[in-house]
Image 1 (cartoon, rainbow, N blue to C red):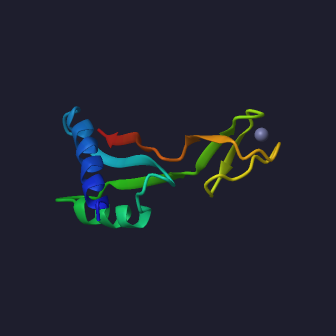
Image 2: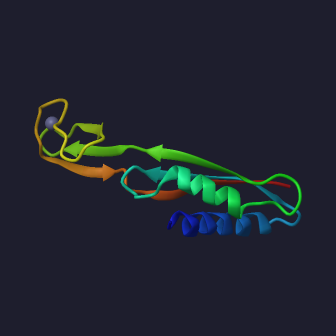
Image 3: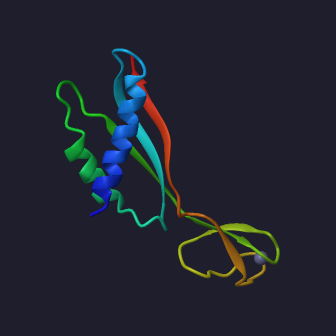
Amino acid sequence: MHEVGIASEILRVGQIEAARRPGARLIAVSVRIGVLAGVDSDALRFAWEVLSQPTEGVAPRLDIEVVPRRNRCEVCSMEFFSDMLGEDCPACSSRNSRLLGGDELQLASVEVEE
Ligand SMILES: [Zn+2]
């Protein structure tokens, strides 16, 4: 379950961010996960809950935004979302499309409270 490693890395980055301000507390971290990134959101949430147990107060929140697969048609340049590999372009039915996104794993924001 590599989600444990990912959760601990996200938590580490969040804590570093909180530590920059004296007395600040980590409130929430939000991440963007593409459907093709190979990360199980439920497993990641579970790992986060285990790892982020607070010594005092409230545990920091993990917000996950799931990013769909995004393609651009090479024929008509239409951009579209798809769930399946090689889905046809909705505008011109071409099968010739390029992957633009959906495989990312990004830290979107870190929320701290002074
Ligand atoms: Zn097209």
